[in-house]
Image: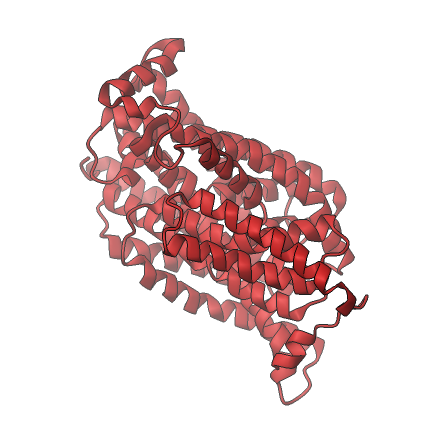
Length: 500
């Protein structure tokens, strides 16, 4: 694929410049809502639930479903549909099951601002709250995956060197999140989600003129893929090569809802009535984005069967399939998809640093007594300041391009899910669950997942996730039962007192 030039290049650059100016303006507009820790982390009640739902769908998709998974489809064929169909079906059902009770607990706990705080309140454990904050730092690798996706688009389409592509993405995102916090993140993501839906529909429609076959377009696509490599139409192939692997993928999608940058969207809702439009908007967006984009990766294998990088399948396909002005709009839509998760992840990490690390430890370590207002103001400053350090860390880690964007992203969020799933689910369903069990589950679940993947105990990362998370459930149940007599109704946090 050649780098775009002439009128198309200038159209694309102009659209991107306008887009970046717009999101920074939104960030500045949101500054008034991000002066408190709660406002910075959630913008509760300041954004329409329909927009919050679109923001959820956009953050759910990210570069993973817009660039990485179509790249896997380019490489492994139709078996990747097991992943994308589960993304909508299992993912949305999980949201419907989790959202209402999570929101109600958040209200019961006095309007929490982050998932670590929610868990800390649920188990009355500051130690757990701090440990979950450190676990959230795995999202740094998730951001690295987004940075790589963005830089790949800039490099393969516009000709901007990989280094500068990463620098542009990191700088723009940190700027508008630092200015506007959750308000800027949700509003821009809601708009980005709308662009992503439009882009997905256009990708689907393009199959009728790039692949042909009329109403038999999918049959024609299968025939052409089979002519390239019969394995491309095998239902079991690549990472999705067994029934256990497929079931593990569906487990991943059900579990993905517990990711901090997604559940924080639920905390942005002010009233219970807002849950219905929120889940409807999220479901519609998830359907179009997760199901349709992967088709572009399959079609790209037909149009350009010898790409050196599978992750470039979507930009290559767009430039082949559409006239210049439409291609430029779609490329902007793809870039917005990447930014939509990146900003959510930055906000999740930095909110946790300010709200769940500094705000918890400062009163203990400070020599003088801090008022509630002083503590809140300083927490916001710490959260915003940490954006710079997190941004620098992700920039540095992004310089070494990974072999597969999708695999890197899925490793990062699987590590978090392995540790969080049991404490959240059992916190809903089992009255005997306690802070001791939650801490043991968090450490064992994440520890086992990292061990399984580092030592390549199981070749399939989805199976590693399933087994590590299952172990987390067992450890939490056993630990909670063993320590039941040691836990009072107040569940005093003896761990933090002992450590500090």
